[in-house]
Length: 191
Image 1 (cartoon, rainbow, N blue to C red):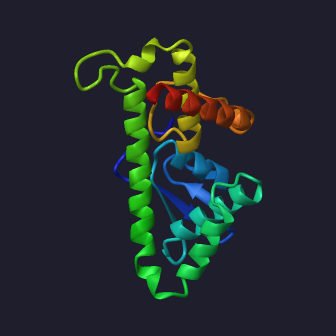
Image 2: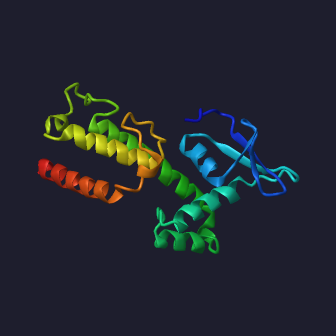
Image 3: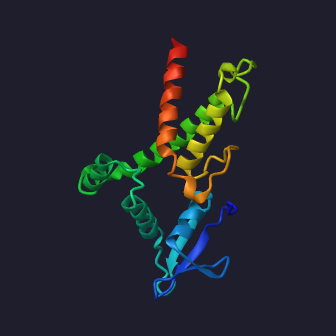
């Protein structure tokens, strides 16, 4: 896993459009750059000749490629709203809204992991998490960690099992079903 530092990884784009990793002195692909980002590394992509910052352009290209391969994270409605926001007065609040939304998502995921007992197995009152006594809890917790790790690209640093590169989308439907069943069980327990 790439080490997360304050200094972004500098990638230079040559006139031939090839991308050059200045730390390892080798050429990289868009998928390599996506992997660096998933591992928590900040990147900066600059044009060698002009010095222009091309980071946004390449990040958008990575997202577009994932979306075109069927790895749909952005619903059509969200994409439509984004297109609309470029032509309306609301454009100035959209970046701030998106940034705050992703911050809230990360915080919510961390809180959920705390509540599931993976980050802080003790509740605020010092007792064991009552869910941990439920049959099958450990298996559900591991599945939840795997799911969150897949959804966040490992950003949360959970201690769950690492996924193999080809394993990410293979069991997504099964994970969704299991999460739905878990949610139903939790709802029944709360009544």
